[in-house]
Image (cartoon, rainbow, N blue to C red; front, side):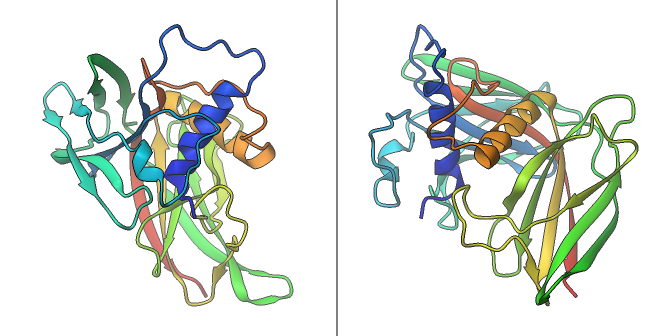
Length: 279
């Protein structure tokens, strides 16, 4: 099964290439980026080579598209670190670049540099100052279903003076990583002042139709709720919209990437985690 990171890369390329009026850049992008800098967490960057829609992608062939030869640097005004190429068998693809010392801090701006074959690809992301202050988390029964529950959280707008963007993930006791919920990105532009969000169980990839969106009684669920910077928020909103309401492999639009010289997104996240036992 192709997991989320491969699906994102395929979706980005399809969304860019399938639009009738899309004009390709004068210089072909050499790198596709999916990177995160998160409060109190090490920076993490996934890199792949662009590929055509005729290429076969699967668990046995994804290594052919992993870019393991780049120099990846993350820096702020006070820190700079060259990221290390690592492997995590809980992920597919399991290869990524990670910092060893540099962790994200709220309010800081981080520059990403990917140096590959003489080109320098750059992006800038700021971790929002305000975090999601979850004031309530609860379960509700489902009609004609005695073994599953709906899960909700509520919180006030992170910044009443400006529009904020949010991204939500869940992880159960049997999962080794967080997965984004369905329609995981939210803008609070039309909310005032409190926001309620259903925490549907995150699927491992955007084409997974076998995973129920409900949690089972007795599940221990960890919710990760994050405010994210505006540029990546706009990217993820459109990405969610395309994967929810359209087929990203046949219909698409230009994703508002913040990667200069490449494709993808570099996301700044101010995240909090809350846990609940489903009852």
